[in-house]
Length: 498
Image 1: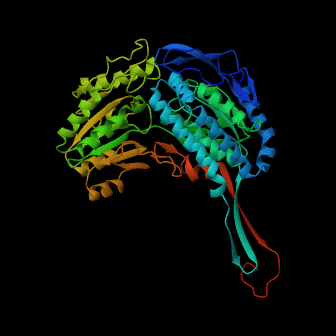
Image 2: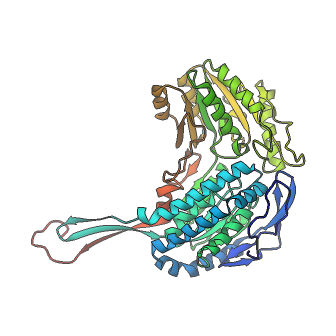
């Protein structure tokens, strides 16, 4: 067990305090500044730890440690770099339940959904293990005696900032591609959920990752700005809200860095009358209540086309039976609960009907931060509940007369993260999939997350920068293509390359 956290010993939702988080710099656990932030267990509404609020000095120390490790790590063959991720995978699988409990305690999601996050994080690590087989450069004799070849070279010291809602999985959207690609990494996790990344750093060390290749700096705005600005950071990625994604993208790009910043979402699930009743009801409810709606892929708007009252009723019936704390977890903070409740209150005051009301529902630990599944019918298309990201277990139902009107509504959104259609018609599915303004689309799937090797990334105000953050696109983001054209002998025939 390391001096900082070690294997999380919880095996239930019972409250547990853990040591304060530290920065991980150059393979050592380092105390941060005296200013700290409380880490709250949302289920209990109680302080379980603290995180240091680091700034530019701590970021610079981490960058210097990463820079010192870079030459040796870059010179390490890619297959040897990937071996670290094989060992990391084994440790994560062995500690699967403990990692899930840690996520549950610091994030508030129920154990089963935390366990699903761990499994997806392991899948991301497995993709990193496969990279040496995928990243082999190509070469071709382009003329007599002239050869062109391409290789993928690391950028150097790179950085990422990750959100509260998936404290283990989202860092592993970035780290395998970047580190197997030969880079050294500085990560700033969300200050609300620092502990999963603390344990990840320990597991990396146990897996044999050399000191300085992976560094963790905790903090808030000052740390993020320092990562964007630091001249020795050669690429930057961010996952979080759209306003901050836009700001960090602009700041990092102004500093000359390649940047890929993922923002928020307002996903539209279009339901037509021929949709399968049971499949649609179960799928939609799972989409908007999973992780208590605190995920960018959650259903936000149900666009009800024509006569679909029987499907709406089935959705409402299922949602009303869900129990906070058992079927879905707590909300991350008290302020988030108030923000979510405000959207519901305003929609109701404007004339929408709250057909499933979760505002008064609590989990077993009444002092925690709770919001039950809520379904609002008859939401106006131009209202805040239909246009803004609520980020809670709330489904806004917007009624439209035709599929064409549904598509126009979906296209009017500033976001473009995900969109789905529920239908039994191949023609309708093909029409919608070809026209929606979204980067990740589903047919009868409410959370159309692309699994490895396919990349995660939306369109429009859901993403700033080029490409996807996972899969092959992710590897290409963290690396640079080097093209070498060579000739070793004079040829008898000539062309323009001679």
